[in-house]
Each structure stands twice: as C-alpha cells, then as structure tokens.
Length: 355
Image (cartoon, rainbow, N blue to C red; front, top):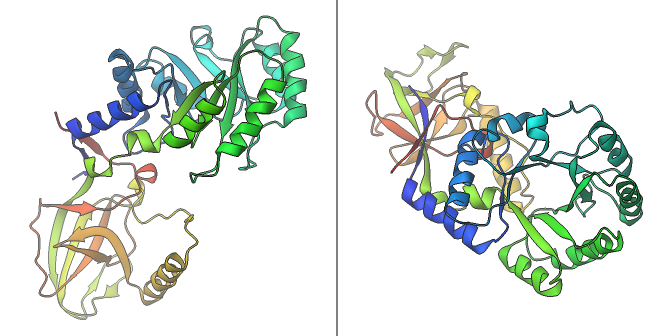
C-alpha cells in the first residue's frame, strides 16, 4: 500500500564517504523532511561518517524544533541555521552546551546572552541572497557586545550564499575581510553553497581561515542513481468511453483502464513549488501544462509501461487515479510503478536501504 523510497545502500554510502573525504570540516545539513530520508536517519548517518574517522564536527538543522530528532542520534555539536530570535524558548541545560546558535542581528547578541551568558553562537553575515545577516558595521557592534560578555562562546561567522556556482569567491573574500575586521580573533567560516573548486580557491587565498562547509543536497542526494521511488498498484479497472468515475463524476473520454496507485497529496504528489528555472524551455513547458490543466488532463509523475501517465483526476490524499489508454500494457494489482518526485518536498511511507 506504500509509497516507498528505495536506496542502493552500498552506492549511497560510498558517495557519502567520498563527499566527506573531499570536504574536511564537513557539516551535514539535516532539515525539513530530511531530503526524503528523514532527519533522524541523516543524523545517524552523520554519526556513522564521524565514527569512520571523517572530519565531521557538527550537524546543521534548519530549526530549533528539529534538534530533538538529531540530539539522540548524533553525539557532536548541532548548529541551528534559522537565526535566533528573542521568542525562542531557552534550551534544556543538557542541550545548551551542544547547540550553536546563528545570530543575524547585532541587537540579538545581547538578548541571547541575557538568556544564556554562556551561549555558543555564530554571527551571520549578509550575502547577495539578502535574506538574513549583518553588514560590517553590524559586525563591529556585535563584536563589541561579545567582548563585554567573556562567558560567551563565539564559534565563527555564517555565510549563506545563493545557489549557482562559479561566482562566489570574490564575494566570500569581501565577507572574510569584514570578518577579520571585526577583531574577534582567528576566523572560522561556516559556508553554504560553495563548490569544491571554490572551497579550494578560498582556502588558498585565505590560509588563516578555517572553513566549515555546510552541505545538504550534494551530500545526501548527490548520486541520484542510488534512489528510486515506487508506488504500488492498488486497483485496476477496465473502463469504456462515457463511463463516469471519481469524486466529481467525470466521464471517460475513450476506452482504457483506470489505475489506482499509492501516493497522493499527503505525500506531496501533485503539489508544486515555484520553479527557479526561468529559461524559455521551462516557460514553454509551463504553458503546455496549463493547457493540459484547462482540458482536465495533467501529466502525473507516475511512469507505467515506460511512459508518464495522465492523472484521471486530481490526486487524492493517499492515492492517485491514472488513466491508461487502450492498447497500453496494464500492470497487475500489487505491481510497483516508478514515481518521479522532488525529494525535499515528498514524504514517503517507507525508506528501504539495501545492504
């Protein structure tokens, strides 16, 4: 009955070790739905990398609520990527020593240290993303506050860059200059979205800086060939033109089969996030999909008999109905069919990792 993520275990583990070996100081990112694998499973795998001798000093989570999923499965530091704000509840004492807060506003430095005078923190610098972070004058103000709190444990600077490689080295250089200028001693930079080549260039240009590359997608999903998602065929119905079906009593336009397969909106099937690709081909595809929508026929992510099939109607919560035209090979109840998904937006029922 399940939507299942199948993982080629040996291939996946080999990829994880290759990334860890190539990135000393690796900080695995485990957040959201755990890139389709769950946050808890990623925490255990980060511990596995550390136990095998890789330089993995910390795991990064997205929010404070995710700490509970990581802390029992990982014995190192936990960095929270979402910046600390005054409404965040104080941490339990047993966790406070393990958690590194991200602080993105100078005024929050004093507010955090009022709550926990021994807090561990990184100062986030604003990048061309323009999301969170401080400029040079904010860093000086934050540094002044830190110097007045000798119990605070300053762990470095956070640099969250936009996606897209090849143009970040100069920006990072400017940010590291600002970091050095804050006068807080040797610089440790926790960086996101630098390619391996860019990391090498930054290390060469700034030999006194310690880099902590925070890596999520390229670590966990970097070898897409190791993953496949499959849905189970739950029912098969032969249908004739004109027959009614589904929640809304639509009519079958021509003879064929209706397939009921596992996977629906509760899993993220049929839900779309805004696309980042603004190219001509992408826009043409969007227009084409809009035409299918208007006609009541939308291509589904399910592949049956080698072709992506149409939704017969909008997906249900935990299952979807597909239309299979006459003449196509019809699967049996219990067969599995492939599903193309966006792993970060899909919650599967089961994850099966081979030995």
